[in-house]
Amino acid sequence: MTPDISEFTYGFALTNELVGWMALSAVPIFPSLIEEGKATGGYDVKLDAPGVPLYLQFKRSHVMTRRSANEIKNLGLSLNVPFHRFAITERKRSLQHTALVTLDNGTNQVFYVAPRFHTLAGINAAWSSQKVAQRSIFISPASIGVIADDFRHTVSFDDTSAYFCSEPQKIEPVGIESLRARLTEKLQSDARPVRDKLTEWLAQNRAAATRAREIQSDLEAKLYADTAIEGLSDLQQSIALRPPSPAGIRRIEDRVPTMPVRAPKELTPEHEILRVLSDEAQSQFNAQLIVVQSA
Image (tube, rainbow, N blue to C red):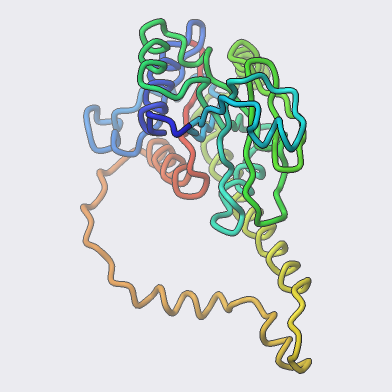
């Protein structure tokens, strides 16, 4: 059943709830805030206090109400109906999942997050009772691993179990209390202030994005090599199996006209890095960056 709520609506509700996280403070980093408010760019990050980067990719959940669903009928999974599922972006469409796996390196906290509800009534009930996070599932991309094929894959889950499909693999979701405990431990284990970590965070994220592109390139090269092209000479096959030239792609992109944009507001070096981190979290990983600190 198609969900009634958008990823934006769910993400807003969840992020708003996480901001006042009892003993923790979760500060979402939105690039637009850089243009508004305070001279420091509108951010509430405490630069002289410890902090942990949390990256969330918001997903919509589709509900399955019948035991004829593929997960139960064909895969034989022990899921109770109704259960939910969300889709992983296919590798052939985007390197998004691969990038999240490489970003999920132990320093960063990285999760797919999806609701255990799919209707407007469901999100309104969770919102009014402040249980949006409690009624969400957090899945580490690293627990799934790199996906080598081009098929459609999903994460399917009920109140007690979660599976990566189509070849079923049981995965362990992280509950909200476990996530809070994990973030608290990270804060206590590294007392360096945020300002001393920013360049390290940025370097790690760019290395993760570069590594994801390398993995993607290797996988595509293997798929090219494994493709049988019958009826061609050896020379024709070598040409057909050759990946497209990056230089050729760049030449095409260079011909696309650019739109004029407003010059960004002048920032302190630290807030400039925060802005870049947030921009690249969206562009490279399709994720929302949240800096978690002690309240």
